[in-house]
Length: 234
Length: 203
Image (cartoon, rainbow over all chains, first blue to last red):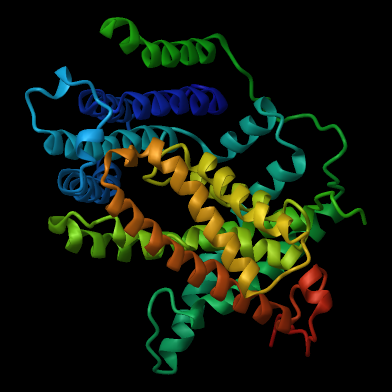
């Protein structure tokens, strides 16, 4: 999964996600979740990371099960009669809501955990013709994230030193962060422009991001998986 | 300076605002999760998130308030959602798409005011329309149409309140406060504001 071109991976998995929304079938959703988890393990993503990330997803899925269970739209449910003959409407509805949380999150993690962030932006710039100003602006903003974290911790420590306890998202902490962030963004753009960045000139790439045969194959596979249920059902 | 071209400093600032609000959202998300776990047995768990939904719209309204260019709300929201994608989130890949949809909602309101009205009302309305837009999308994408209409109406109502609070009231106050510090002097909001001393880095 790591080798697939980020833009192709993005489009392919997006198609699959929408296909799942269209079918809203708990079995497909769960299959997508299991498949994503398997691919993540194959891609050697740390199991600890997976457990840490998926814990809130399971909680949310449980929450959505009860929403679907208790507040089902009932008779107006646009699902065919035969598929829900065995299970009651509200139970099935709960399963749909819970499984789609798992499926979307699984596919989402499959994308983010196997994709290099810098490569992703560069791939978007190349394959989606994203203007340079946006691609590099995004990278620049991403680059100051560590500064933001440090600044946040520093402000918090300053309050603590004065014996003032502030909660995690208190305005007292966020206001200085916002001011600093806006100033950094301006300094950063001045710095970039002073180094010759205008966003208009043609650039060459250190490592060009290309679409190879297996990227196309991946896209094809996703499309195939998305339309397959249509044929098997008919 | 042409009105409609994006300068690098606009783009970087919008993306940076996106980072800030994405981080705030993630922090608040955990609080939302706690509330929703508590509400799970009643089947009311989405309300935990509906309460903080308005934070999603903040990047759009605050950026538009500061920059005041056509397209600022939409572009800022898309950039913010791209940042969210970079950070990795549990909502899945479609986060960029939701950014486009929410941004469009806010943008339409500012456009309707011809980019001249920048007050509590216009910013709250921008948040509300974002909420309406994204809700329509969720009806399909999150299969919400399978839920009871009363439940959906209640969810939408809470989301409206959240939008007004975060993207209307708090963003306006934050924008004015920023203008007062002088850091946004080179943007439309700062040019209009009565600024005092500009902070020095070492202050």
